[in-house]
Amino acid sequence: MSWLDTIVQGILLGGLYALFAAGLSLVFGIMRLVNLAHGDLIVLAAFLILLLVSALGLNPFVAALVAMPIMFGIGWLLQSQLFNRTLGPDILPPLLVTFGLSIVIQNALLEGFSADSRRISLGALETASLNLGPINVGVMPLLTFLSGVLVIVGLNQLFYRTSLGRAFRATSDDVVTAGLMGIKPDRIFATATGIAMVVVTIAALCLGTRANFDPTIGPARLIYAFEAVIIGGLGSLWGTLAGGVIIGVAQTLGAAVNPEWQILAGHIAFLLVLLVRPRGLFPRAVD
Image (tube, rainbow, N blue to C red; front, side, top):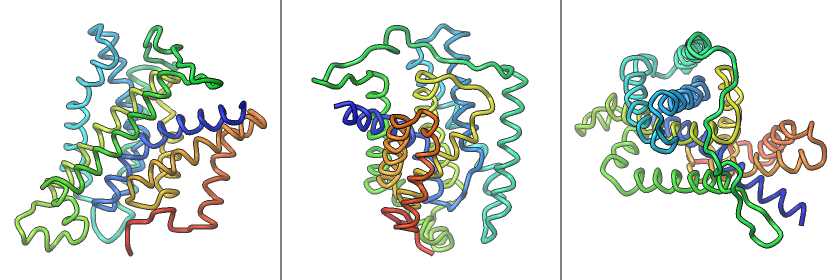
């Protein structure tokens, strides 16, 4: 039963990693943009929620709802005014620009909030749990996993059931042809990044309420997001969820054997999947 509990906790942890990765997968799937500042944007959203909670006395869930349109606007501006200028056949300019943005965000947060670690308090909800027979499941980990599933379902519905989703798929397949059909790729890309930042806000709420965070943890969150995206297959949203779960289960199993192996076990699982399926489990992107 202890191993079953370990696996369940790993699955729930995988929901958090899927949230980290969902926005990254969406942006890459549409415009092939590798955003090295993605982890720092998650941390930025976490500090924004913390600021709204502390300054206005809002409930963290309400603060996240307030933060969502703000993060959408930040994503829109970044894409329309910065990232769109770097897109092209050469992948180096987006990498350099987003790497620079990562450094800017980290230093701005250090100036504004210092290097002290923070946490978004949920009161009694932080320790609340459900007794499912021999297994105790924390309420917040369960809500985090369900949020990850709902985000993946919502993005898939948006992608395949709406006119905006058709525009996303058209620009992803052929930007020039989509432009000739009346679609404005720059606006579509900005909208996609804005939606990704809404997902980032959800991930930030779950991160900030489950663990301490500080201005420098963004790159580590980025690594988990990249690994989940690559394990699942570039551009596959459901694959992203599967990748997050694989990393989460590997980490909890590794920690059960030796606490020092937790992070290492996740990276080893990532490498093993790549050895078997170099393009990921459910690859969508094509060369």
